[in-house]
Length: 276
Ligand code: 3PY
Ligand code: MG
Image (cartoon, rainbow, N blue to C red; front, side, top):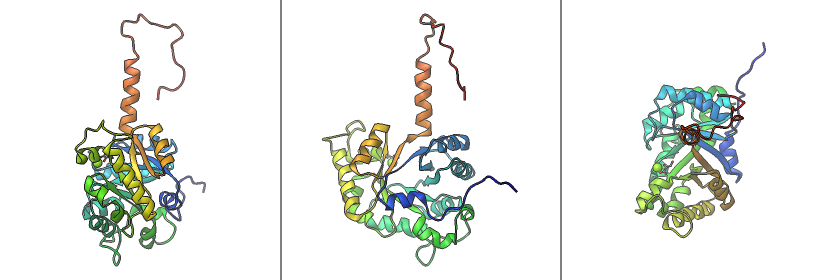
């Protein structure tokens, strides 16, 4: 019988790339739409994160987004709303191959994240199966120990202070800087970023801590040139914007390009190509 479908994987491609020092670039899914997730996955991102912290996504939609991401050829991940045992367990059972966990401020917080993501005797995740186990070669329970991407968010002044201890925590794959919360925590306006600012100083301190501990540093980036810049600096786990931003940006540009007076009409303007 002919079959199309998803090949089983031996290891997590995201973790493999980060451990070998390569950059791994993805984006965020905030639209709560499996169709948007599938379309995004076809672009070639390494991974896509379903954002359960700042989007209204429900669990059943999240599972369908994971399926769509996998079908499109990227690694399904999620950002949980908090370092919460129940959220982490349910999101991993739903099929995430890695989690981004917000507001990890101390090494103790980081140990607790790892503990929540691991089965006994290494942690406290309860076993109830995970739908992703069917796509893994070998025993999912032992596979998770080395293969789940454990990405802790560094997005407060306290976390920057503790970056080395957080990143040095056994089981942490890497960190991810949230530039907006970091700005809030530092008491600076979100526009007060870039070279010469305390915000950038904090970002570079986190990068230095990642280098020292041999873990991956990451950041949420606003533009493709910023992703390029951060790769050049040595950052590895980089997200570019979100499906919501891409949609609103393109829609805004197109809408703003309409001349409602018709005065600048161009006879050759009828576009060819797909409307979808
Ligand atoms: C932040 O900027 O605070 C974020 O959490 C980005 O993902
Ligand atoms: Mg944040």
